[in-house]
Image (cartoon, rainbow, N blue to C red):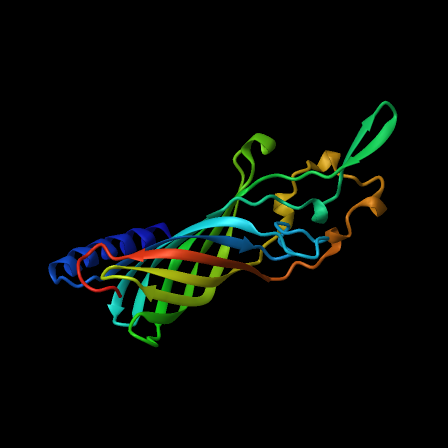
Length: 238
C-alpha cells in the first residue's frame, strides 16, 4: 500500500505541474469536516441508546482529473471516538471482601486511507452530483496511556458514496458528501479495554447483553461531510 501511495503521489505531483503548464486545473484538493456514525456492532457506537452515537471527523482528498467527469486519487479520514462498554465484560474488582463491577471505556484514533475515484454527472453548469468508489485500509490506534503500549488494529475497507459539488468561482467550490466506509472482518474484541485477568467471569449474568451481538463480516460506518474544494492550477473549476 505504501509503495502504491508513493507512486500515486508522484503521479499527482507530475499531473499538477502539467496542468499548470497548460493553464487547465488537473488536481483538485478537498479538505472536509463532518460527522461519523460507526456501525452498532463495531463497539464504537452505543448498543443501548435509541440514537446512534455521532463523532466529529476530518478528511482530505486529492484527485487528479483523467477525463472531464472522472477524477482519481487518494483519501485520508480521521476521527477520535470512544469505545462503548455495551459490548465487553465488566471489570470485576474485589475490595474489602466485596465485588464491584465497572464499565470501562477508552478513546481511540481511527484513521482511514486509500485510493478512490469520483465520477461526475453534470446537471447544470455549477452543480454536479458525483459517485465515489474506493478501496483502502483502516487503522484504529488504542489509548497509549490506558494500554501502556502502542496497539493498532488494521484491516481492509471499501468506500462507497456520493455527493454534490457546487462551483462558486474559477477554482473553488463546496461539496457535500455521504460516504459508507465498509470494514472487512472487523473484530471489536481487539478494543476491549479491560485486561483478561480483571474481566467479570464470576457473575456473567450481569455482563452487558451486547457481548453476544453478532460480528458481521462487513460493517457500515457512515460519514456525512461538508468540504471546500480548490484547484492549485489556474483555470476553471473541475
